[in-house]
Length: 500
Image (cartoon, rainbow, N blue to C red):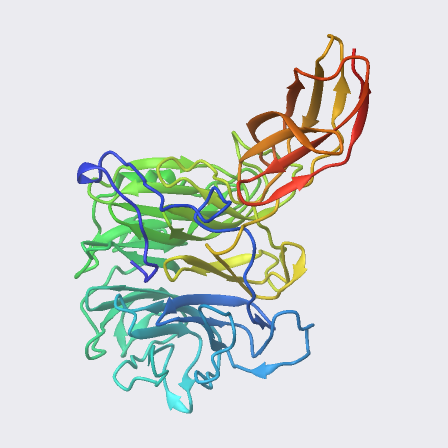
């Protein structure tokens, strides 16, 4: 697995899944708040992320970074395609400063967090030859001397399993030895390993099972090892030979008007999760999960809007996509939802609704994500987060009170029975809670006369009715609604009614 410090509890032998999320953040229903933490920005897309040793290592198309709140082109610091930021504060790590001569597409940390590996289009790091792969000491930031394979073309994805660094992309040679789009080197001495899946087209994603028993590939390939296997494969960890993988049928084979490919892979305990992006209307864009031991499909979510990245945090599966329609949840017409959360046991959407936009050059939005255990870092080509200017990079944590519920509107009041007043109001909306508490308050003293709870999401906001059963008959009374997520409380305005 890529270093993402995942927590998920799996049932016996991984056959019956029982995901146990960690305790939610105060005032939230998820393991993270929807309030973005203060973080430096980049001047172009972020394509690679890893968190280790108290730092977030970030790679991509950018050549400049700037503080939070700074407008584009202002207060810039040079960082060519690679930078590091403090995991706690989001501030630039000024000690990590390397001259990389071309794009960084992927970053992964060693399982112990001591080393950082980068892959991309570069051929030099600090003037030294590094053909598309390089490694750094995560603590000191020093460029490591023994990880320098000669990869012939782009490295798009990296994963560490045991003492192997697996990588994929668009290349055909490693150290002048044939390795078509997937290869592995030793993390000990940098030597080329026998692992050779031999994919016939680009590999976009690689991840190893937590115990390195299997390695998974995703991309646009049609064959692996000369055998037909569209877009996804499970392979042996030492040879790269194909392994049986029944769940791969979750990805439809190409047909006119629809080509879908795997964009990201996340292993966690006994389950492996995949994200897909499709071309064409109604083409599979969603996520799916498979049992590592059996290779069988666990669930498949068919939200439309390409899913670019997935990361497990606190027992929830967070995803970056531009979902615009999710069966059983929201339909077309609600806009693009670039950040969502899923229940890893079922794929159902969970209580977390922050959002970004999508910016140039891909106009996709989030492209990559990673965690240091209790946070989520997201990179991409967005320029706003929750409607506020923030380019290329953002983060969420489990600190603070979470998002504040939307203030309730004026209630509709009626009194048709002596001493009783009914108040009806549309449920509110909270970006990191679904279940909210509603209280009916009477008069200037804000006396609580009724309380209830109700669920709401951005795609479903039903009405809720609260009743004052002890209203003073024959008087004019004012009522307002108070809504709370357990940590934040918001009150609406007063409406008046004559009590029978």
